[in-house]
Figure (cartoon, rainbow, N blue to C red):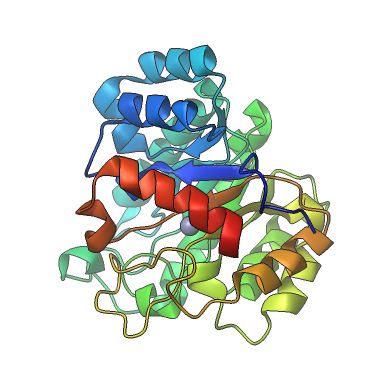
Length: 287
Ligand code: ZN
């Protein structure tokens, strides 16, 4: 297992972590200044500055990517909605190519409209079918341009509104179905926040193996959790056995960046400098 205690060379920052403090160009500069060598940016943050400008800044600072956030949200109420989702995922794949991402992360979606409190239907099996079909169609395009897709299972508390793929097992079943040859173009993102509770976590990480384990995200699970989306903890402040899980991840041969991803009203209220410095310190001591 890699030793993180003396260096944060394997740290990547998911840029949502300081999205309320800074725009993306500033985030890239603040990371580069601290020796954070990689980021995983969100599409809206990229668009706010400009795709070409961000690509140039990444090159100028030598900043790499650990992923690109995000594609997905495939289910829709009607055929036009399904087509629009596929078109949007195609654009996301093109953007991920432009910024040289190693993968496009997929938050696959769930009951259409549920995020706004108005689910168009309640049939979760239908949503899961639309997710499968959406990934299959997107994978065809991803193959043409060579952009791996990483399915990120979300905690079941988000099964209605954000992702109806909720375990690594479910995500890997989709990989088996849609990419039986293990081409490396379809895999999973293992985020400890969403998966730490899963009794099958160790076996499913092992099942994914290096070809399908495309990303590893860390933060912590606070007790009590006050908000289903924006109360993630800084590493070390919660109950997740981060090192144990990283041991399972690295036992597969995974040698990529360990991505810190914290959606937190608390940390969004702190100065960005303090957040990044704390991320580095905790990465070294507890991740
Ligand atoms: Zn994540």
